[in-house]
Length: 180
Image (tube, rainbow, N blue to C red; front, side):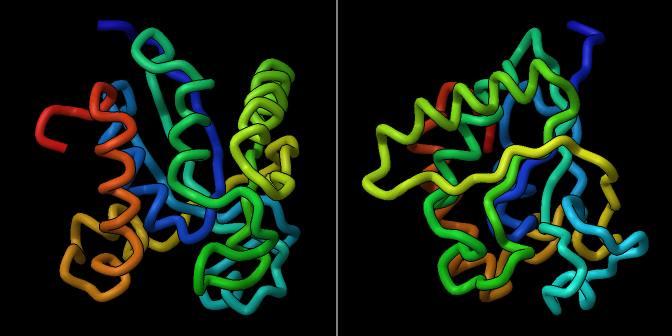
């Protein structure tokens, strides 16, 4: 098993959805829900949800690049959210739900831009995903970590997350952990 690790920081709506999806991907060793892309030095869920912090709900995904590439990590993002809706995913509306890729270095930026350009051909509307350097990542409060696993019967999980996981299973069956 490889000891290499890389980190991707991604936003595509509610972080609960991304967290639930990436935890099922083979080669992913950790997922942390949090906030990034804004200017509040001490964001909290209520403040981020108010829309006044500039932060997006994001996840940091720690992965083994010998098992899954950064490009493949991005492919999962494109598959489980709509990158053509500015500041919204379904009924979740606000800048905190924007589509965003926060890059950790120039190579991630290059791959993210290539990936965004390639995925544009799949959408009839312009892809509006921001690609910006990560400045600071703020982990979210404990009750937002691994939310779906702890609350699978909660209404939002049933109505919003379950369909995304079904799409993930259909599109990426070969990339999922056993039993995912």
